[in-house]
Length: 174
Image (cartoon, rainbow, N blue to C red):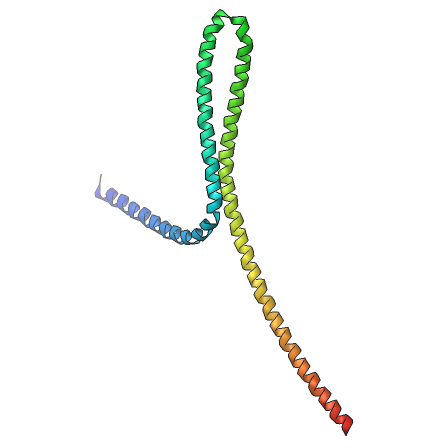
C-alpha cells in the first residue's frame, strides 16, 4: 500500500477513535443520570430477571420434551410398520402435541420480546415521572411567590384600613 493510502487509513482511524472518545464522554455523562434511575428499576429488573430465568428453564424443559418426542416418534415409526392402523391415531395426537409445543416456544419468544419492551416502558415512565415532578416543583414555586405577594398586599391594605379607622375616630372627636 502507498504511504498516502496508509496515512488516509490512519487519519480515518484517528477520526473514528475521536468519535468513539466523544461518544464515550457522552455515555459517561448519561451514565451518571441513568445511575439514579437504575436504583429505582433494580427491583423491577430483578423480577424481570427472575421471569427470564423461569422462561429459560421452561425453554430447556421444552427442548427436552421435544427431544423425547423425536425419540418416541422413531420408536413409533418402528412399531408403525407392525401396527400401522393402531398408530395412525397416535401419529395425529403427536402432531397436535408438536404444534402445541411449537406454539409454546413461540409464546416463550413473545414473552422474552415483551420483557425488553416492558423494560423500555419502565424507563420511559420514570422519565415522564421526573418531568412531571419538575413541573410540579415549578408550579409550587410560582404559587408560593403569588401567595407571598398577595399576603404582602393584604398586610398593606390592613395597615391602611387601621390608619383610616384611626383618622375617622379622630375626625369624630373633633
